[in-house]
Image (spheres, rainbow, N blue to C red):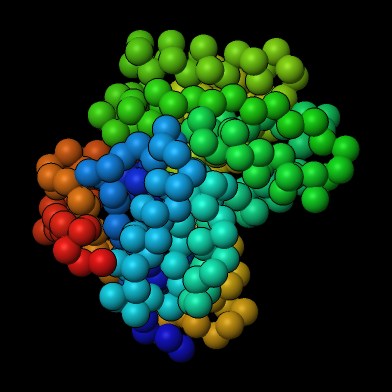
Length: 271
């Protein structure tokens, strides 16, 4: 048994979709979450900047002696995968678990990917999907505005702006005949009710946060790193900008008030 926490980081709020899944799948694990809200979004940054931010985020989580570090960020997972692979601790991003799930789920071998500009330009999902399903055709669409919708809590299933934005982004994937769509940024599963409504029930959505949480469970079990079964997992949240907006949206996504669990940190003073 290992009582150390699991460290999770993202550019902002999106990684909470991974935390939400981890709370259900790994209820005994303590989680330390860092949302780099002061520098969100990552998806429009240069590769060099994304790698720098990721390295700093990881350095902060290491101060908690995490037994595993989870990049709950599609941009980091695809653009800065080399940074993740060099981590001494057990680590993962969202790309491999989600790509494998999509490659196995598709029935017509047409898979759509919704991601940030950096994620789509990296071509990382395409490469991972083809490793599992060489016959797959991958169609990718950059959806940068979806991050802003989530960060600003415009996530209601009837929100006109959110619906119009999703409809515009998803159109090329549906026109291509995709029967499976990877929500390639952890912000996007938060909008999955809207995306599913527009895509239709015949389209399978791959929730990157859920697939990542399943993979974390697999790693912990395989390496005897699980916490005690009797332990009730705790969560601690850190952000690099004001906590209020983060807590407001987190309350909706996690179904609990996290104000007493959330703290502002100056990332430049702790790395």
